[in-house]
Image (cartoon, rainbow, N blue to C red; front, side, top):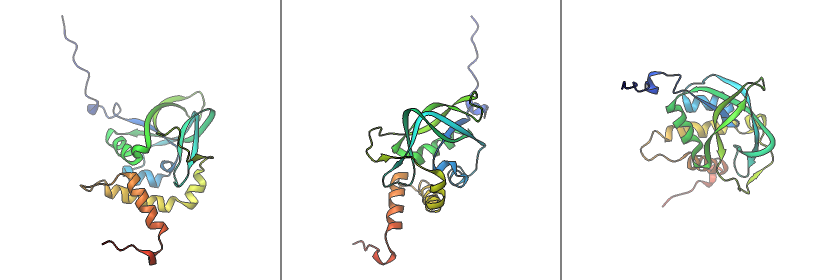
Length: 185
C-alpha cells in the first residue's frame, strides 16, 4: 500500500498562511494598522451582515455583537500573516474573541470568510448606540494612535502590559491635568 506524502507545510506557501480580517473600528485607519503590523496590507470595503457596531461607555473604540437584520460596514484586510494575526490578537486582547464570519464585498454576491473580533461580553450594559468612524477620526484618532504606538513598544518589553492596561493607563494620563501629577511613595 503506497503512502501518501504529507501535505506541504503552510510556511512553504505564503498564500496558505494568509488570513483575511474584517475590521470595523480603529483598524479601518491605515495609520493604526501600520503602527501594529508595520505595513498596510491590501484592503477592500466589506459588509458584515447580522451584526451591530456599538459605542462602549468609557471607551473610544467600538464593539460588535450579533444582531438580526443589522449590518456593519468595514474593511477586509487581506494577506495577514500568522505573526500579524498574533499581533492583532494581542492588540484586541481579552475584550474580544476572534471569530470566523462570512462577509460581503462591494458586489453583494461576492462573499468570503474572514476573521473578526467580536465583543466577548454579549450582556455588557456599557454598549449603546452606534459607533461612528468619521467622528472617531476627528475626535480620537490622534490619541488612539499614540496609545497604539505605546502598546506596540510595551509588548516588546519583558514585563509587557496588556492592550487594555495600556489603554487605561494612557487615558488616565490624558484626563489628568499636568498640575495633578501623582507622587508615588
